[in-house]
Length: 111
Length: 117
Image (cartoon, rainbow over all chains, first blue to last red; front, side, top):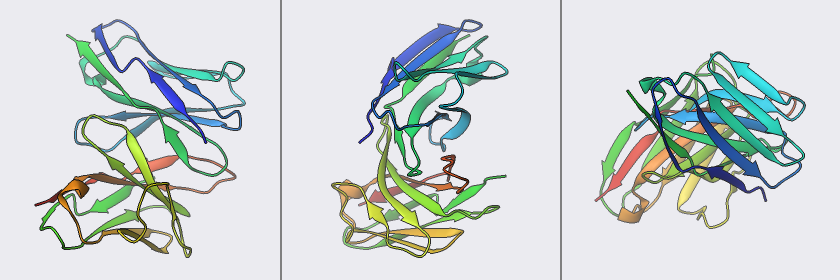
């Protein structure tokens, strides 16, 4: 089955700096890569996703890049703000609708 | 759009009793619903995949007789934790997926915190 590795497990950045979270996956059949943000005690929220026919996608301060050959994808957050502090999960999925999640990255943005 | 509700948001029960958790897609039809379990500071662990009108598919290590899943309609799935024990205490989250040519977007419910005493 699919295996998703996520790094780092924790990340602290100064407000205004950029944050990068990286994930690798094992199943070459995976073609959908979402990123979720989860605040303490709340539900995971889909913040951005990318499909395997696209190499990069951007939405305001958030961008995701995908390298199918190397089987890795990354989340980039620019101009970080305190409200970006949360746990971020990457995931990978194929046509079965199931998603395999990474273990999460706790991002702390220091004012 | 794509709103998923879950009820109850928290529940405390005694050992040996059963607890039912409901997951509803409010503004879309969910062909597939998923049930996850999340321990503190850990990732989402998929328990089972539920398709409307058919039996749920359980992940390895998840007892299907203990975690009963019913997906009676395109907007409702239920998880019943039977004969609950303290080790079943956890955060249970459902998600719903729209079927759209292989699309995998999953929208999560707010979760149910179960405490078994």
